[in-house]
Length: 565
Image (cartoon, rainbow, N blue to C red; front, side, top):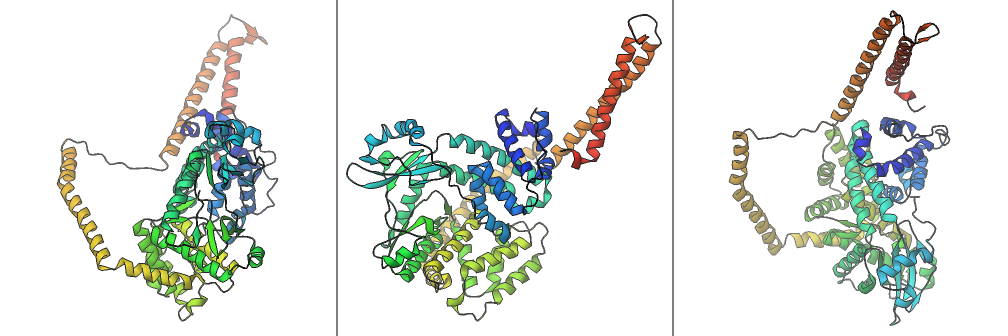
C-alpha cells in the first residue's frame, strides 16, 4: 500500500498538493496509474478532478513545465537538471525545461534577521561596515545581498531562505518514492532510470542547500586553476560562512550576458572565448572536478582579458576511469574515428534493455564517419555530442547522470564561446589539451605508477580470495547461504491478493446475513417493522448495502479509467 510506503503521515499534505497540481495540469491518468488517488482517498484526502482538463489543449512539455513551476523549488531544480538531459528528452522538452527559472520574490530583510543574527553572531549592520537590505538577486534556495567588510573589502552575502530545507527534503522523499513507483507501474520509464536520476538529483540538491559546500567547491577549483593567471575565483570569507550563509568576494566585472559592454570596455572577445574554453577543459579533462553550469550568467569578464567564475553550488565530478573514457570519446569525435566513440557510448549506456546493439553501433559509426575530411576548425563539438546523445535517446538508452551533466557543460561552453566569437570552435581549442593529456598519460613514470597501483589491487584481491571463498563454503555447509531476488511487481501482486481476500470475506458475510435473516423471518415474536421481524429486515438491508458495495468494487476494478472520476 502506498501509504505504508510513504512511511509517515507528515508527507500526506504535500503528496495531496502534488497530486492536485498534476491533475490540474492534465496528468490525472498518471496520478491514477501510480496509485496516488486511491492511497490519498484511503487516508481521508479527497482530490478534486473537476478541472482536470483545463490545460488539455497545451502541449505536454508546456504542461510539465507549468506544473514544475507551481510545485516549487525542488521541482524547478529538477527541471533545470533535465534541461541538460538530451539523452532522455527531445528538443521540444529541452526547450521548455530551459525556461524554468528559480527567480522568486525576495524574502524581506526583517524575515531574515533572526537567522542572520544566529549565523553571523550579531546584526548584519554591525558585523559588516555596510549591508544592503535590498538583495542583488533572489532565487528559490537563497538570495544575495551586497556588503562591505570593516577593512573596506566589497563582498556578497548569500543567505539561505528560512524553512527551505524542510520543504525540499519532503519533496525529495516523495520524489524518491514516486520514482520507485514509476519504475514499477510504468515499465516504459525503466530505461530512463528514474530512481537513479532522482538519487543523483537529491545528492546534488542537498549539497547545494549547504552554502559552505559551495565555498569549498570554489576553493578547490581555485587551487586547480592556479596555473592559469587569467582566471579568477572569488575569495571566501570563512569567518562569516556556514551552512545557511556564505560571504564571498564581490566581482565587479562585465557580466557574461552583456556583450555590448564587452565591446565598450575594449576587451578581446576572441581571446576571452579561448581562455574560457581552456579553463573549463582543464577542469573537465585534467582535474575531473568542474563547474557544471558555465553559462554567461555565471561568468564575469575582468580588465586584462581575464575571467571570473561564480556560483559553484552545482559541480560535476569525474573519476579517473571516466576521464579516460571521455578522452577516448573526444579524441574519436575530433579525429573522426567512429569505433572508439561507439565503444565508449555503449559502455556508458550500460544495460541496453533489448536495444538493437548492432543497429545502434552502425548508426553511431555512420554519424561520426560523416565528418570524415571535415576541417578541424569547422567541427562543432558541442553539437556533435548533442547529436550522439539523441541517437541514444532514439534507442531508449540513457547516460549516467554525471556524464549528462558533463555534456551539458560542453554544450553551454561552446554556446558561450560562439556568443563571444562567432568563429569559435571548441574542437580546435580541445585538441591541444587532449593531446597534452594523452602524452601525460603515457609517460614512463605515469605508466609505472598505474601498473604498480593495479598490481597492489590484484595482490590485495588475491589475498582476500581464500577468506571470501571459505566464508561462502561455511555458509553453504550450514545451510545459511541466501540468494536475494527482487521482484518489482511482488507488492502489487500482494495488494491484489489482499483485495480479493477482502471481497471474498465480505461475500461470506453477505451470504451469512441472507441466511440468518431468512431464518429470523420465520420466527414469530420480537420487534416488528412494517409487520415483519425488524432484525430480519435489518439483516437483509445490510446484505443489500454490502452487495451493492461489492458489485461497485468489482466493476471499478474492471474499469480502471473511471476510478478518478
